[in-house]
Image (tube, rainbow, N blue to C red; front, side, top):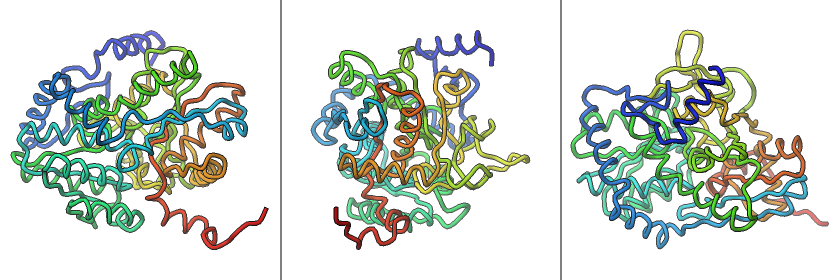
Length: 415
C-alpha cells in the first residue's frame, strides 16, 4: 500500500467512513457467514443502528457503567516503573472495572441490546474466561439466561473463572473439538446460533467476526480511550507520546486506540503474543507473522500455513491465544497508523513480576504483554510519556503463575 493510499484510508477512518455499508474497513472485514445466519446478522445490524447512539439507550448504558461497572476507571501514574524504564508511565486501570477486566464494557452494552431485541437467551464464547464472566454478570444484571462455550484446554487453565461463571448463573460448555481453545469455542458458539437464530443472541467478546460485531465492539470499548484521553489531558495538560495495548482479537486495544487515531503526534503500539518462538504454532503474533484470509465471518489477517489452513497457536495467556485479529487492526497496520510488535511468554512473565514488585499491581498475563512491549519501547526512546492499557487483573492467572514460578508461594525472602 503506497503512502497516498494509506493517507486516504486514514482520512476516511478519522472521518467515520469505516466500516462502510458492507462492513468493510478498507479491504478487511465484511460478512462471511452461512445463509441461515444472514437474517440474524441483518436484524442485529438494524438493532445496532437503531439503538447504539439512541439517547435512551446511551443514558441507560452510561448509568449502568457508572453505578454497576464502576466507570470511569482510574488513570494511575506508576512512578517506580517509570524510574526503572526511564520514562513517565500511566496505566489505564481496566483491572478495576467490575469483574476485573475491560470485557464488561462490551458485555453489558450487548446484553442491554439483546434485551431490546427481544432475545430469549444469550450465547457467548470465552478464552481466558474474562468475557465469559463479564457476560454471565451482565446477563444476570439484565435478566437473560446465558450459555458460555469454552475450550477444554482453557477450562483447565482458567478454573477460577469457570467457577465464577457458575456462581453468576451461566451454563458453561467445555468444547473438546478442534484445538480446544478460543477458536474452537467460537466455532461451537456459531453452531449453536445457527441452530436457533430467532431466539438466541450471540454476544461476541472481541472486535472480530462478521459485520456488525467489529464495529459494535469498538464502539462499546471506545469508552476506554475516551476516558484515558480526557484524564491524560486533565492530569498532564497534554497527550501521551505513545499508547500501548495487548492484542489478541483486539477489543481492549481498539477501545484504547480509536479515540487517539486522529492525534497524529500520539504513536500507537499493539503487542501480540510472541509465545515460545517464531515458528507456526509457537506464537499468536497474527499481525506480525500472518497473511490475509477469512476466519469466523471476517476477512482479516490469520496465522495459516502455505495451504491456507488456519494454524493452532500458543501463548501463556489464554486471552491472546487466537489465530486471527479484528479487521480494523488489520487496516491500522496496513496504513501504518499502529505499530504491531510481539512479546514472548518469558518477557510477559518478567514484566508481570516487575509490575507486582514495583507498584503492588498484579496485571493479567494479557496486559503483561503490553507492559513488556512498552518497557522495550521506553528503553529505546528515553524520557517519553507512555500510556498503557492495563486490560485486566491477574487473579485469574494464578494457576498458570503457580506453575511458571514454582515455589514462589512457599518461599519467603529476607531483605
